[in-house]
Length: 318
Image (cartoon, rainbow, N blue to C red; front, side, top):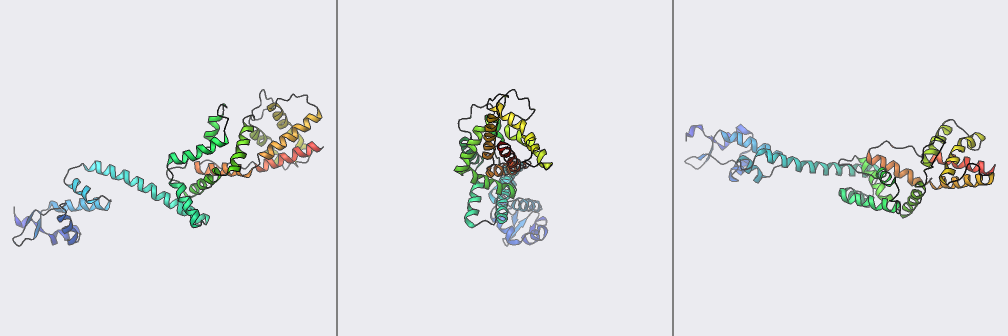
């Protein structure tokens, strides 16, 4: 071999910009072995060592371990396979880092205590299967006994939160609040009671033109009245609520020719029913659900329910 064509380790260092000690380390590891040695025993490298070192530096900067780098430069494994596997590993790391960042940002925004931060971290580290089990346990408690209802699948799907792979801090905080609600036994009981009542909120042969679900029927009639500033104690409010009362009567199987006493009892019962629906945790759940799933946050039903109950109670006393 022509010794004039070979490079000393110092010359190789100047060409590549790598420190001599780094090149020596790669040489000793067998990644960039010398092509020859001088009579005095000094390492000599051929021109290919420059390209080889450039590749080694690139792979190391991308995070590949030295053993894998050696296999690549020795062509024991294709670079494309190594790159694909490493890219997949980096995807996992990126997801973890994004989640950590979202947790820390959410904790900062909420002013978490160390204990709350620990809980937030544990909740977000749950696997997708573990999170689903937490959700399923809650929904089973809420909809116990209603699996045979034709709307069961659609309703439970509409109430299922799905934390995305790359949640933002707001979604992380919302998921943590939802997880707390899942564990609230009183909320579970309240939602179970509402679910049972909602299962019957579909009037047959309804001629009012209102949505079949009671909550939406109330919203459809009352929101325009609220916007118009109608006093719930006024005669106009009684007119607004009349179709809703008729709708509810059909839900219960009442006839149209019920007497005044029966009508008053029906209004009282509907008022009680709407009072039960006013649990603020229900609105909170729907708001958090929308945040986690990236849906539009729904308008609170509370103002509509408050107005409706006042209108029904006033009419019942008249």
